[in-house]
Image 1 (cartoon, rainbow, N blue to C red):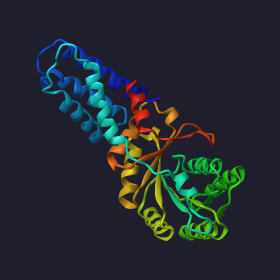
Image 2 (cartoon, helix red, strand yellow; image 1 turned 180 degrees about the horizontal axis):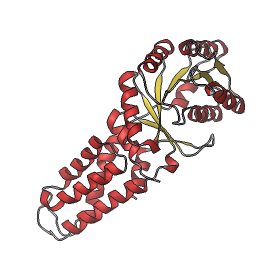
Image 3 (tube, rainbow, N blue to C red; image 1 turned 60 degrees about the horizontal axis):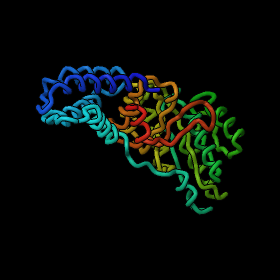
Length: 307
């Protein structure tokens, strides 16, 4: 995973080490590393790191190194890695809630923990909802699924099949029905029967249009979710970043789930989304099975990139 980004960082470290290693007792000047950092910038952009985020990473490395005096015995390699590591952690290491614990703390009959899932078609939103429902079940919480995508043919059937396999209740409506009413009914159902979490699926068009955003805003107004969770496909690179930007501007995003990371050879999408919208990544998807989901660990992710 993430081979392109790993190679970019490793190559940069090696190039700077070669340049600066000859400057014992001298100060590092911008001219010593300028072309190396220009190359790093291009490599980052090619690895699906958003332009402004790539600039921020390069600038951080520059600020750390320029003006630094290289004493004998200085571990230049570690110095450069620390500069990169610090910026990546600043971008990625944002506290995310424990949605399992929060649901467990809800008392039967109280308002359940409500999660609304956003995202365009094809990113793995339905599968992600099923994975999180499975995670809840394994931790002693039976969630209610709301099939509030009343737009796409087959969307409710997919969710119903997941709900059947996982043995969780699902509330749906006829195609063309008001999606907000489905969300409302699911929450009412959960309150009446003592369920502690509601997972609301929503429509996602490949072309994110004005009507869709209006529909999503209405679902949010009616359901008053604890968290709005955006699901994005790590393989779509800059498209994922633009989706994140648009959903955040139009509806608001609290948390992000990144899917298909097991097939991501570039690695820039996670860094870009965290940098562009500044929201925590909650989970990453690592396969198609119900158990193929991991809580995102920024420190582990960064060390994987710099290994």
